[in-house]
Structures are given as C-alpha cells and as structure tokens.
Length: 170
Picture (cartoon, rainbow, N blue to C red):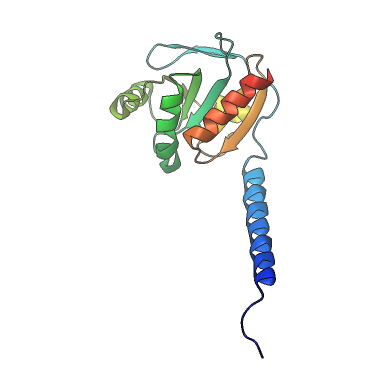
C-alpha cells in the first residue's frame, strides 16, 4: 500500500480550505458592517477641536475618508497613522467617540502628532452612521454618496485604493 498522498487531492484540499477561510472572512466582515450606513451620507459642516472647518461632502470635490475612532481603541492605534498619512492627500473627516472632552481630544491628537482634526461626537453621528465598533471607515464621493464601508483595522494601501477607485468612478 502506498502512503504518499496524491498531489492533486492535496491541492484540492488546500483550495477548499482557502475558499472556506475566504468565505468566513467575508461573512464575518458582512456581519460587522450590517448596520453601517450605505447610501447617502449626512451633510456635515462643523469645527473640529483644533478649529478646522470639517465638512461632508468635501468642498474640494474629492472623495472623503470618514473615520470613526476612539482614543482608547487598540485597533484605532493601528489605523490612525494610516489615516494621518492619507489626510495629506485627501479630505478626512475624523469623528472621535467616547474620547473625553474637547480639550482631552485635542491633547490626544497633539500627543500622537496627528495632523488631522476631529469632531468630538456625543453619539449622534455614530448613531446616524450606524457605527457599532471602532474603527469604522466610510469613503464618500464628492456628491455625498457612500461608496465603501469597513470596520476594523485597515491598511493605508487598502484605504488609498478605495479612495482612488471612488474618484475614478465619479
């Protein structure tokens, strides 16, 4: 009896396991994003804690990254530097939740060296956008249509790809 596995059956098994893993990943992602707003973003015009004018849709005519985060959020600590880098090229509307007073948030942004300003949300924007976890990220086109949503850690290349694709499709 030959105990060596058939290479074809091994390849089929690996392919089946990979497809199951991908399906699980996308299923979990869809579940986490099920309550997130997916059509038209609300119009926002406000001052951030550092005094910047923040608006949605952006007055620049470019795609906007809407970033819900919390000062205490571990996953946000991984995503915020990417958002900060993106803020040099695209409008970013950062919205902090459960992060203390305006002065606390301002001190946090300064301590981290982030160049983006942020709104300090009392929960109303979180509720309107359907945010139930952090970070929650939306890509909104120049007309205010939400094009992409994601929840959890995101990389800078993935966020930039979504912004670029949004601009190409406008």
